[in-house]
Image (cartoon, rainbow, N blue to C red; front, top):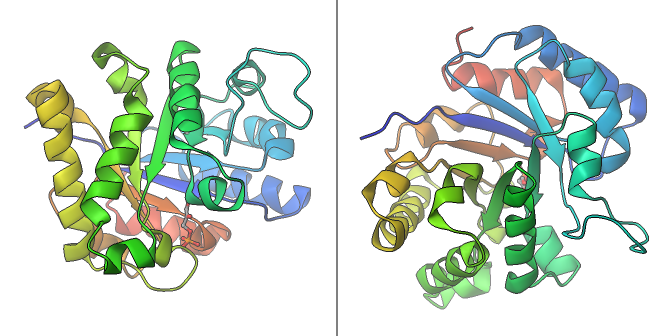
Amino acid sequence: MAARIPIIAGNWKMNLSPDQARELSAGLAREHTRPGTVEVFIFPPAPYLSIVAESTRASAIRFGAQNIYPEPKGAFTGETSLSMVSGLGGQLALVGHSERRHQFGETDSQAARKVAATVQAELTAVLCVGETLEQREAGQTESIVTDQIESGLREIGAHHLDQVVLAYEPVWAIGTGKTATPDQAQAVHHLSRALLRKQYGEAAASSMRILYGGSVTPDTISGLLARPDIDGALVGGASLTLDSFASIIQNSGFHS
Ligand code: 13P
């Protein structure tokens, strides 16, 4: 099986002041100067992209937008284009986060367009999928996650899959303090990889990084990463302080 370098990604959501963003990203950059055994991604709010670009310039940290609009430019008030992100040195776009889907009505087909635009712009898309508590209790986890992955990847060819990272984020685990158990997460990661294998073959399936997200902490990261199909974490709350995010990176086996 291809070796997959784990990714620890911080999604700051709509948090932090400009000074806090500068301090946190500079602190992370000091700790993560060279590529090591873990890749570190950060997703600041769009107005802070240039702050993060500047503070992380001399580091191995990659950053990107929490959301993008798939058109190159135009009359789209409030939106952020991929070239704005890449023009500042950003290499990533988060797509289809559950808060986008559930609070802003983003659909699977919009997520598919965003994934396609991201890979065409030569950035990496981190496509988020995950079921609600209601869907889990109704036994629909597998079908929801399968649908979201299939439709999210529908507009790209197999040759672009190396520009995609998947993130399984069960909605019931986000911001609730209820991390999925390593068994629960592994089960969904395993079926996601099986789906990729069926659709795209072994090589694509075994090289795809699949992150887990939902109340990850420095205490839960190593149990999650010990599972064979969990290749990292997408961290919200615990990515907002240097102490906790650096501990998650450390506990995931980072050595520079
Ligand atoms: P929390 O880590 O705060 O649960 O958030 C997870 C998340 O939504 C990351 O994208």
